[in-house]
Image (tube, rainbow, N blue to C red):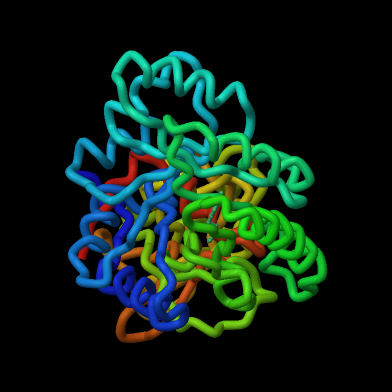
Length: 371
Ligand SMILES: Cc1ncc(COP(=O)(O)O)c(C=O)c1O
């Protein structure tokens, strides 16, 4: 097996989940495990969460295939799929007892067609667009849409939800406006006695800082994996990062002064030095934008990454340090003992991204080791 791997700390995952539970009291949790649980491996992630007595009440995923994978691995909780249904997939929703996000008559008719054949009711959550403008029925049209659906005995309205565009920013004014719009829809429905099931809105940013948006259920994603969604939120839930990225020294070369390293000859040694080669590259998710900017932790010290990141391999300048072949190289995470750290946020600052993208970007070629 490859000696470059992502270490997934299951006890940290459980720690984060239980701290979310503590913060929200008796509100339900829909654990968001799309994109292979943000790159952590969805089956092991869900298995770990489901081993807890306080396990999630729901799971949320982006696409149908992700939900089916959960069902095939004996996940019995309700699963909401954020993407709307398409014609060819409709039968699978009832076959696997999945909940579809619905925001137009078209979705209903696609689901109905398939379900009538099977003689089952369709289970839906209505998605309301309160300002994200990605998906969902406009909040001004949501009341009459839900009212109409509520009259159909073949439809179970299991929930209604919206999604915040910037709940992780310090300025909460737009998130508050979205919340107000969502509340207006819910109030009108309540006033007419229309049952809309569970209302939910809060992603990680809102879970941290907008308890007024919890409703019946919250939808944490990034918090589960140990990161705050931005550097502007509070840290009102204690977290521990779940993923580390580890490789090793595969070769050490003595290199003279003013020699170039890697493709494009973009880096030249300043003095006689030792250059190590580490078997991980941009095909593994160690993105090329990190070239000549990043660093690694080896034997209790930081060393600079030098030369262009290649598809399968990167180099570091270890100067005269007495490292040897096989020594561990930490590319993301904390080194036990020294406590030195290179976090997803350190990585993000070098390439202008967010921890979500770093973790989802660690490719399938990197084995996940669970501890
Ligand atoms: C609809 C929806 N809800 C919840 C989440 C979880 O967001 P976060 O990871 O910021 O908690 C996402 C993720 O993008 C989402 O698309």
